[in-house]
Image (cartoon, one colour):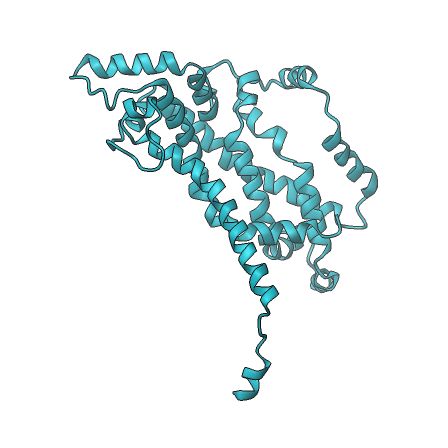
Length: 305
C-alpha cells in the first residue's frame, strides 16, 4: 500500500492553477447557457404586470401558471403538437434507417462506382438550387399540403452519412469477415453486427435529426396552406409575430366569464416568453437522456474525416 501511495500522481502548483481556471471558465460557460432559460421561465410564472415593467430579474414574484394554461387553449394547438411529434418521431426513424444503410453501403469497397456516388451525395452539402427550384420540385412531386413533405426530403442527410460511414470504417474488418464465414449477407451484417456496434453514433445522429425536425418551421411556411398540417413551431411562430393581437384575444376570452386578475392577464411579453418555453421544454426533457452518447459518437464519427 505504501508503494502504491508513493506512485500516486502529485498535482503541482501549475496543475492546481490550470484546474482552477478550467473550473471557473466552465462554470461561467454553464451559467451563460442556463441563465437565459431560467430568466425566461421565472418571467412566465410571475405577475405579468411586474414582467411588463421589467422587475423580474432573479426570483419569481406572484407565481401563477395562467400563461401556460391560456397558451395551451389556443385553437388547433393540440393538432399541431401531433404533427410536430409525428414528424419528429417518424422523420428521425426514417432518417436513421436511410442514412445508416446508405452510409454502410458506401463503406463497402465492392460497392459499384462507390466513389462517384459518394461524391454525388457530398455535392449536395455544398450546393443547392435555391428556394424557388426547391418549391417547384416539391410541388411537382405532389408534396404541397402533404405530411410526407416533412419526411421524404430528410431521409438521407449527407453530413450524418459521412459521420456514419467514417464510424463503420473504423470497425475492424475481421468482424465482418467472421460474419462472411458464417454465411451472413449484407442485410444481416447491417442489422445484427453494424447497428449494435454503432449505438453511440446512431444516438448522436438521432439527436441531430430530432432537434432539426422539432425546430423546423420553414417547410411548413412554404409548403403548407392547410391548417391541419401546421406544425407546433409554425403555429407558435405565427402567434409570436401576432403576440399583441393574441394577448388581446386571450385577455378578452379570460375576462368574458370571470373577474379579471391583472396579475395573470396575458401581455405581449408574456405571450412571447411562454411560447418560447413551450417550444423548448420538450427538447430539454429529451436531450439529457441522449447527451451521454453525443460526445463519444461525434468524436468517433469525425475521426479520419
